[in-house]
Length: 241
Image 1 (tube, rainbow, N blue to C red):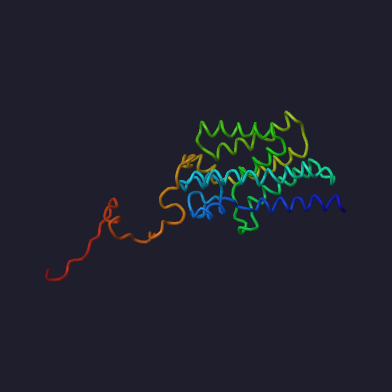
Image 2: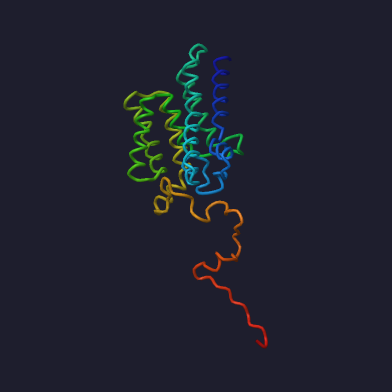
């Protein structure tokens, strides 16, 4: 009974920690707009960066990675005395990743899981984490597309693990996380094929997400409307004028 209960409790704890959407939490704490309301609508570091606040984006990246790293590390350090091994650590990492994708505290509206997956991998196998991170950095540097870098890194991670360290429970978790990550990037893949995907550091386009305060999607009026290209107001002449 204990052999099943402890891994289950650890996985639930990992899921709850993963459900902390730091993109939303940090944005609220810093007085920024909800990242789900602009840009790609994804509550993650890349979309927070589109707000123009680099500090918020960096904090989001760090904490999203830590919520994948810390639960796995705790199992690896303290788990053996309770009979919890690498398999449970991998399960907890997967649970934290799923928590980020479908956070129970935020109406199950989560992100794509790149930073959290990176944290999980770094905790499970630091060398694998560095190799995966290096893959992401290389692709991101040359392409300037965070989504493309994430997809390539997710595809390579299980192959790195299998070829260098051999098969095991980590490989299965990496494959599942990779498939889910690619699935969550389906919209990005379509944009990449069309050439419309936003690049790293690109701010949210005007009109994307929630309109700025005071604006309206209805017919514009005022000074800005007068200067709008091709826009004019025609009023019927009064009789007798």
